[in-house]
Image (cartoon, rainbow, N blue to C red; front, side):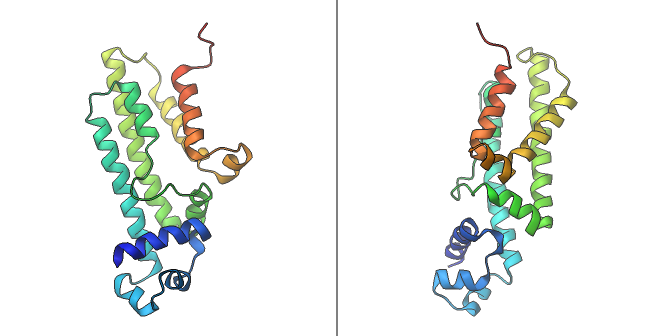
Length: 184
Protein backbone atom coordinates (compact mmCIF):
# COMPACT_ATOMS: atom_id res chain seq x y z
CA UNK A 1 0.00 0.00 0.00
CA UNK A 2 2.84 2.37 0.82
CA UNK A 3 4.25 2.03 -2.69
CA UNK A 4 0.79 2.55 -4.18
CA UNK A 5 0.46 5.79 -2.19
CA UNK A 6 3.86 6.96 -3.40
CA UNK A 7 3.03 6.25 -7.05
CA UNK A 8 -0.36 7.97 -6.75
CA UNK A 9 1.36 10.97 -5.14
CA UNK A 10 3.75 11.24 -8.09
CA UNK A 11 0.73 11.22 -10.41
CA UNK A 12 -0.91 13.99 -8.33
CA UNK A 13 2.32 16.01 -8.36
CA UNK A 14 2.54 15.74 -12.13
CA UNK A 15 -1.11 16.71 -12.45
CA UNK A 16 -1.48 19.45 -9.82
CA UNK A 17 2.04 20.29 -8.75
CA UNK A 18 2.99 20.28 -5.09
CA UNK A 19 -0.23 22.04 -4.19
CA UNK A 20 -2.20 18.79 -4.34
CA UNK A 21 -4.08 17.96 -1.16
CA UNK A 22 -4.25 14.78 0.84
CA UNK A 23 -7.96 14.72 -0.11
CA UNK A 24 -6.93 14.68 -3.79
CA UNK A 25 -4.73 11.72 -3.01
CA UNK A 26 -7.37 9.79 -1.07
CA UNK A 27 -9.85 10.30 -3.94
CA UNK A 28 -7.30 9.03 -6.45
CA UNK A 29 -6.61 5.97 -4.30
CA UNK A 30 -10.21 5.45 -3.13
CA UNK A 31 -9.09 5.15 0.47
CA UNK A 32 -9.87 7.04 3.65
CA UNK A 33 -7.63 9.72 5.10
CA UNK A 34 -7.04 7.53 8.15
CA UNK A 35 -5.73 4.77 5.86
CA UNK A 36 -3.42 7.27 4.19
CA UNK A 37 -2.17 8.59 7.54
CA UNK A 38 -1.40 5.03 8.71
CA UNK A 39 1.43 5.05 6.17
CA UNK A 40 2.47 8.72 6.09
CA UNK A 41 1.96 11.10 8.99
CA UNK A 42 1.85 14.17 6.74
CA UNK A 43 2.12 15.50 3.23
CA UNK A 44 5.59 16.77 4.12
CA UNK A 45 6.70 13.24 5.04
CA UNK A 46 5.29 11.94 1.78
CA UNK A 47 7.09 14.60 -0.28
CA UNK A 48 10.30 13.91 1.64
CA UNK A 49 10.00 10.18 0.96
CA UNK A 50 9.54 10.76 -2.76
CA UNK A 51 12.51 13.09 -2.82
CA UNK A 52 14.60 10.44 -1.00
CA UNK A 53 13.64 7.89 -3.65
CA UNK A 54 14.53 10.23 -6.52
CA UNK A 55 17.86 11.33 -5.01
CA UNK A 56 18.85 7.73 -4.21
CA UNK A 57 17.90 6.74 -7.75
CA UNK A 58 20.16 9.48 -9.16
CA UNK A 59 22.97 8.52 -6.81
CA UNK A 60 22.82 4.84 -7.79
CA UNK A 61 22.83 5.65 -11.50
CA UNK A 62 25.68 8.10 -11.05
CA UNK A 63 27.73 5.55 -9.11
CA UNK A 64 27.39 3.06 -11.99
CA UNK A 65 28.55 5.74 -14.44
CA UNK A 66 31.57 6.78 -12.38
CA UNK A 67 32.65 3.20 -11.72
CA UNK A 68 32.35 2.26 -15.41
CA UNK A 69 35.15 2.20 -17.94
CA UNK A 70 33.55 4.91 -20.08
CA UNK A 71 35.80 7.72 -21.31
CA UNK A 72 35.60 10.87 -19.18
CA UNK A 73 33.55 12.88 -21.70
CA UNK A 74 30.99 10.07 -21.93
CA UNK A 75 30.84 9.90 -18.13
CA UNK A 76 30.21 13.64 -18.06
CA UNK A 77 27.43 13.36 -20.64
CA UNK A 78 25.84 10.34 -18.95
CA UNK A 79 25.99 11.93 -15.51
CA UNK A 80 24.36 15.17 -16.62
CA UNK A 81 21.54 13.40 -18.44
CA UNK A 82 20.43 11.05 -15.67
CA UNK A 83 16.66 10.84 -15.28
CA UNK A 84 14.74 9.06 -12.54
CA UNK A 85 14.15 5.38 -13.29
CA UNK A 86 11.70 4.91 -10.43
CA UNK A 87 9.18 7.43 -11.73
CA UNK A 88 8.34 9.01 -15.04
CA UNK A 89 10.28 12.26 -15.45
CA UNK A 90 8.55 15.09 -13.66
CA UNK A 91 6.98 17.89 -15.67
CA UNK A 92 9.28 20.87 -16.15
CA UNK A 93 7.14 23.24 -14.09
CA UNK A 94 7.70 21.12 -10.97
CA UNK A 95 11.26 22.34 -10.43
CA UNK A 96 9.96 25.89 -9.93
CA UNK A 97 7.00 24.57 -7.93
CA UNK A 98 9.25 22.63 -5.54
CA UNK A 99 11.56 25.62 -5.13
CA UNK A 100 8.61 27.87 -4.21
CA UNK A 101 6.37 25.47 -2.29
CA UNK A 102 8.92 23.39 -0.37
CA UNK A 103 12.06 25.52 0.04
CA UNK A 104 13.54 23.13 2.65
CA UNK A 105 13.22 20.22 0.26
CA UNK A 106 14.61 22.36 -2.55
CA UNK A 107 17.65 22.99 -0.35
CA UNK A 108 18.16 19.22 -0.18
CA UNK A 109 18.06 19.12 -3.97
CA UNK A 110 20.47 22.06 -4.19
CA UNK A 111 22.87 20.38 -1.76
CA UNK A 112 22.67 17.13 -3.72
CA UNK A 113 23.35 18.99 -6.96
CA UNK A 114 26.34 20.72 -5.37
CA UNK A 115 27.84 17.35 -4.39
CA UNK A 116 27.23 16.06 -7.92
CA UNK A 117 29.01 19.13 -9.30
CA UNK A 118 32.00 18.56 -7.01
CA UNK A 119 32.21 15.01 -8.29
CA UNK A 120 32.10 16.25 -11.90
CA UNK A 121 34.90 18.70 -11.21
CA UNK A 122 36.99 15.89 -9.73
CA UNK A 123 36.31 13.81 -12.84
CA UNK A 124 37.33 16.68 -15.10
CA UNK A 125 40.50 17.25 -13.04
CA UNK A 126 41.41 13.61 -13.57
CA UNK A 127 40.82 14.05 -17.30
CA UNK A 128 43.12 17.07 -17.40
CA UNK A 129 45.83 15.21 -15.46
CA UNK A 130 45.52 12.25 -17.85
CA UNK A 131 45.68 14.57 -20.86
CA UNK A 132 42.27 13.53 -22.24
CA UNK A 133 40.75 16.96 -21.54
CA UNK A 134 42.51 20.23 -22.19
CA UNK A 135 43.38 22.36 -19.19
CA UNK A 136 40.60 24.78 -18.31
CA UNK A 137 39.71 26.92 -15.33
CA UNK A 138 37.59 24.52 -13.28
CA UNK A 139 36.11 27.27 -11.09
CA UNK A 140 34.68 29.01 -14.16
CA UNK A 141 33.39 25.73 -15.58
CA UNK A 142 31.80 24.83 -12.25
CA UNK A 143 30.06 28.21 -12.05
CA UNK A 144 28.98 27.94 -15.67
CA UNK A 145 27.50 24.47 -15.16
CA UNK A 146 25.87 25.31 -11.83
CA UNK A 147 24.25 28.48 -13.14
CA UNK A 148 23.20 26.86 -16.37
CA UNK A 149 21.73 23.78 -14.70
CA UNK A 150 19.77 26.03 -12.32
CA UNK A 151 18.46 28.14 -15.19
CA UNK A 152 17.57 25.09 -17.25
CA UNK A 153 15.12 23.95 -14.57
CA UNK A 154 13.09 27.14 -15.05
CA UNK A 155 9.69 26.34 -16.49
CA UNK A 156 9.55 29.76 -18.12
CA UNK A 157 12.83 29.21 -20.00
CA UNK A 158 11.83 25.71 -21.10
CA UNK A 159 8.34 26.80 -22.20
CA UNK A 160 9.63 29.85 -24.09
CA UNK A 161 12.10 27.65 -25.96
CA UNK A 162 9.70 24.72 -26.38
CA UNK A 163 12.16 22.33 -24.76
CA UNK A 164 12.18 19.66 -22.12
CA UNK A 165 14.81 19.77 -19.41
CA UNK A 166 16.69 16.91 -21.11
CA UNK A 167 16.58 18.75 -24.45
CA UNK A 168 18.12 21.80 -22.78
CA UNK A 169 20.83 19.73 -21.06
CA UNK A 170 21.66 17.98 -24.35
CA UNK A 171 21.99 21.35 -26.10
CA UNK A 172 24.21 22.65 -23.28
CA UNK A 173 26.41 19.56 -23.47
CA UNK A 174 26.72 19.88 -27.23
CA UNK A 175 27.96 23.46 -26.84
CA UNK A 176 30.23 22.54 -23.93
CA UNK A 177 31.80 19.50 -25.52
CA UNK A 178 31.79 20.44 -29.20
CA UNK A 179 32.33 24.16 -28.73
CA UNK A 180 31.20 26.97 -30.97
CA UNK A 181 33.54 26.50 -33.89
CA UNK A 182 32.35 24.73 -36.99
CA UNK A 183 34.21 21.45 -37.38
CA UNK A 184 35.09 22.17 -41.01
